[in-house]
Length: 228
Image (cartoon, rainbow, N blue to C red):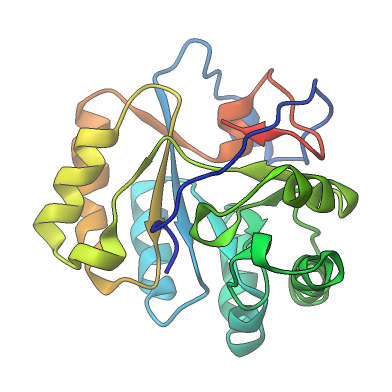
């Protein structure tokens, strides 16, 4: 599962252009608002539809890093995720540790997922998240060649490990900070069950919950950049 590893290297490259985001999203100014991005990996999963309902009811947009093979299994769920206005990123086809692969294998993992997402949902991800957080300068460059920036996180809940609603909620609230990026998994049922209370408490604490592109705002991302 994602979240066990740590990033090996983060390479920053000066700005460029973000993918288009919905008009309503553009109204959020994270330079003024206390923004936080909730991100979910490994889907679409069996529990993703329920998570989408929770997010829609709460009027919250999130970022989903999807796996190619999961999209093939549940194309309708990805279509719904995109239709609901959430941001989509590439999380490889089969979730390998990328630094252990040859260049052409890494490219296949990334490119096949790009093609599957484009075919199913009509969009091409501009963001990528390496499985387990395993990355290096070579992986960043290969992702850049496929037109993607690399998106990491400021805190991980380790929800795949605890699988406990109360612990997951406590982890999110402990990790939450302005301009933070929280890593969770939509495939963990306990995470989905914890989300209503998590969102309620984060809003109570003054957070505006946004997508990663919204959070980046004026700090434009381009292929080859690592964020945050």
